Image (cartoon, rainbow, N blue to C red; front, side, top):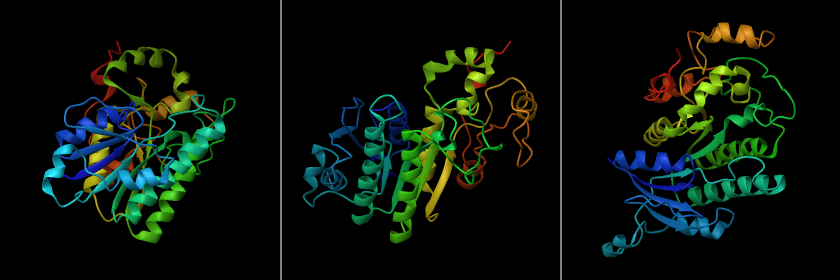
Length: 298
């Protein structure tokens, strides 16, 4: 049965693929963003996540003009998906990136919990693992990167995502709501698979992303699985596809390119160094868009 979902940041790179996926699954979605998303069946409420009052209003709102016909006020919201953010460093000054992302996430989660919404999904990031926006050539501590890794970013964006995970955990503990944080990998849209030829030709160019990615459509599946899976309290999930972006098995690739970084467990076949084992085992994720479907490797 479809659910009523408020999605912040649905106009962004990931959101414009995830929202249509949720609609196809039978959900009803209100987009909350600073820019409209022109997609059939989706109304955009222009609102600022940094304004607490606007977030309380957005999470207690009609989704469209047709809902006024009911005469009983806005219907119950089943879930909030919070993707709105400054999406990386070097778009806004560092202090603004940190402030917008942390205060905005606090406002969204606070409004959801205090309004009685029992499911919140927030966008965390692969940057929490500390290498993506690091100064210089920083190594990972170990492989695979799993959710219990000692995350240690040094940049304003990655740090904001660490704080957001702590915020989510705090609200989950105090309220008993299910709040799941997705450490989203490098988002690849369908038209971007042409870049993979360059990735394969220059393997170390993908070190900062741990040689892993998430197809934007598979991210839609992950969000939908999170919406449907209740009772987990606070959780962190790596939101990435299954395999490494390389043409040799993962253990061989890492031994060749990162010989001094230890493995905490065996890596079988082409498993991604940023592992999605938890979402496969806990949520039942089954990727539909392996990069090998779209890239000729010779």
